[in-house]
Length: 207
Image 1 (tube, rainbow, N blue to C red):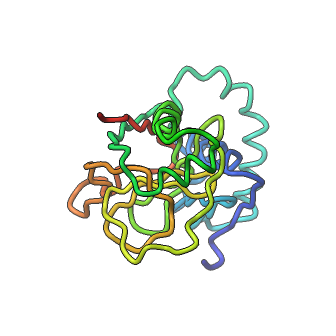
Image 2 (image 1 turned 90 degrees about the vertical axis):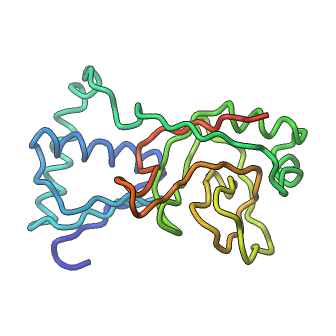
Image 3 (image 1 turned 135 degrees about the horizontal axis):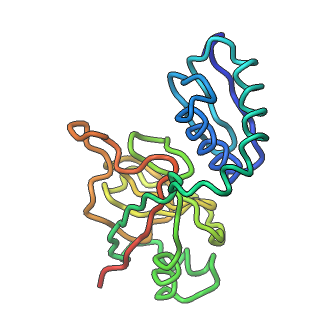
């Protein structure tokens, strides 16, 4: 990415989410120079467009220590307070496989999945595809051994510890548990992606 970028490596997606939110708060308060872009992933955060990356990182570490108590008492809502509801028909072809992985009945998959609250940890794979994690985490689900050559847009799937919605028709190996009519990505919309890192997500079960 060049000499004006740095890659912060972290231990977990929860550490990524906390650090990503902290960077946003510190930049808005003027405690950190605004980078061109901040991109969270599963275990890293890419910060692009800072003149002195090492110095920027040192300021981040210092500001994090100095502002920890202030952030705990901050009355402003965190990024995760913004919530998007996704209506879902739980009619996916892989419900039985997910029920086996979760050691529950097929009907309970929908109940458990829709009862949890999720946070968008990061985006990738395709424009508008958000990797959502639940707190507490749902049991992990293995990817399919035989990925499908085409998964319909709006398909709701699980893989590993993540839940996601396919923004368009494309190949995919996630376990499909349902579908939604929401448009996850629209190039003519602002913002084009419905979901972005830090947002909270609820999956609402439809009859």
